Amino acid sequence: MKLKNRLLMSVVALGIASAMSGGAFAADTIAIITPSHDNPFFKAEADGAAAKAKELGYETMVLVHDDDANKQNELFDSAIAAGVKAIILDNAGADASVAAVQKAKDKSIPSFLIDREITTTGVAVSQIVSNNYQGAQLGAEEFVKLMGEKGNYAELLGKESDTNAGIRSQGYHDVIDQYSDLKSVAQQTANWSQTEAYTVMESILQAHPDIKGVISGNDTMAMGAYAALEAAGRKDVIVVGFDGSNDVRDSIKNGGIKATVLQPAYQQAQNAVEQADKFIKTGKTGLEEKQLMDCILINADNASKLETFALSE
Image (cartoon, rainbow, N blue to C red; front, side, top):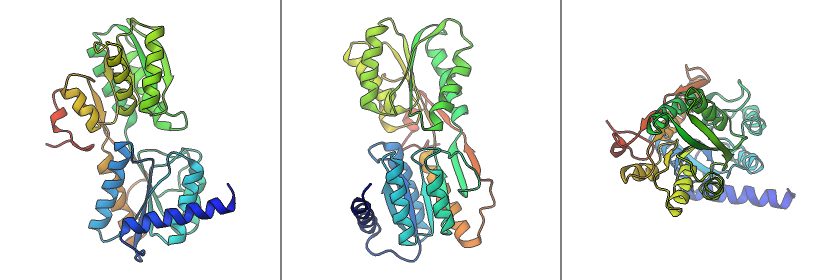
């Protein structure tokens, strides 16, 4: 990237952050960097972190990397230049993000990761992630039950660079592969994208018109797959997602998608800010770096209690 473009990106990033924090940065600012807020999961993360930061007396610098590691690196430069006290990050790649987090650490700015891990320990202060394997097993068990333990099915995978994609797929298969009458006829990536999932599902349907079920690595892809199935007149196909979005909640309530797995995005982000606050004040969190939060199965029985990636009592 040319120097002129890099400088422009930094200026834009700082301008966005300034507008969102209400003007010039206060001494105590926390940067919140996530993928695009077009995905409600990532918006919930940003909202949860920003709300907790405000409650604790911090200004916020809210930025979006669009799953682009180069852009993420530029945003880290902007955050470092702004003198933030901490960075809350849902990263743009397990390997590709290590250097940016290390760069912040070298400037005495601690990072607190949510949702996605990086491949190196000792660089971030905290890595707070959903127990993706446990959650995938919950989803797979429900999928098996809905399928009646038999039939052809397809799997939609997330981004290969995201460790969560592989962990969820492994959790699915460690359950489903125990049932010999359940046959995987297609396994394709849709890169967490609703649009890609729609196109992929169209192709899978053409190749395997007898398909009975689809298990998806996230809700966004599940929504795309279900839309393609609905357009083809195949609302009978069982679809199970992963995330716990309001869109899938509504689909479940309307008899569309059958189930999803809630990962507590909002609470993860709030936990990260609380830990950042403690670290800023004391130099430690009192917790292990890697922290797992269990997931919850969402189906017709409890979908009405789900709101913005949180389940009410």
